[in-house]
Length: 367
Ligand SMILES: *Cc1c(COP(=O)(O)O)cnc(C)c1O
Image (cartoon, rainbow, N blue to C red):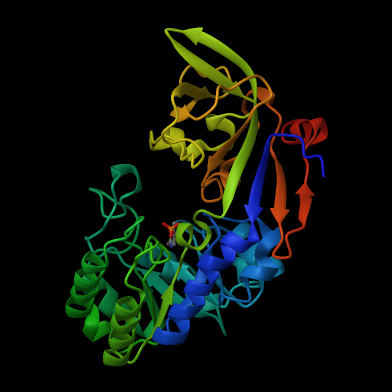
């Protein structure tokens, strides 16, 4: 098949490696895993993912609807601020609705028969390398801080959600923090049915102590007689996709700069937001050094600087790794640039273009 760049390539064989670890954790710990759609919503691969996961969790009405329509199984609906209209519709899709505050809970719980209700808690601890993504940052609006106020509304809810990690690959840190939750909220947990530990636990990473992780989760759920949920986003899809680009020009300004037919700002926005260089597996130790840059007008549209084994030329393919999480969901039409297609390499090795974008999609994104 002749694929024209740019395109996101999701490799189901790589995805399956993560999914098998997720299933292993649920089998050995009893903790269920629901996919965090805000990280990854490319529904073409949901038929594979849903065989290994228990459902989805969402941050808005549309994500909840997507989870219901395209993934099925359990639908957890959370939003930092639901509107009255949202709630009317979200209750058609959700098995659980998790409120971010006690005022939202009080506003809406009455209309929610047959739906489990939860509340997000801010435990004032977190693991994040970035203040921007730190749910326990000063003045954080994410979750309820005051424990006394939670006690008062306890009869209205069946569970609590704590999302306090971000790319946390440190099991000891997680273990210590879980003990902390047990000490501080154990009296509440004993009266509830479920607890969600949120996302941000990097347990599919090579070398992560999976068995210790399972044991820890199992002990916690037995101690408090409670069903644990995990909400993996990044860890479910990590290393399963790349952004495949071609070089359209090479310019020189003190250094060699190769311009590719994609852009950080439009196609891998998180790199810009967190000011991290793109991962590039193919280039580590070669002697040809290039800055790889995007073709938007933004001066700082730079993927990173890498050492390639071979000299690059116009038309050379450059593959940017780890392009699934927080990139496909954030792609946009900045500069009117060609939107990368979505291509899936199936488990049987065949490759399928699942979505292509054209001028019509661009013009329809505004009016
Ligand atoms: C973002 C988010 C997740 C997923 O986080 P990852 O770091 O991608 O695993 C899960 N739960 C909640 C509430 C979130 O906000």
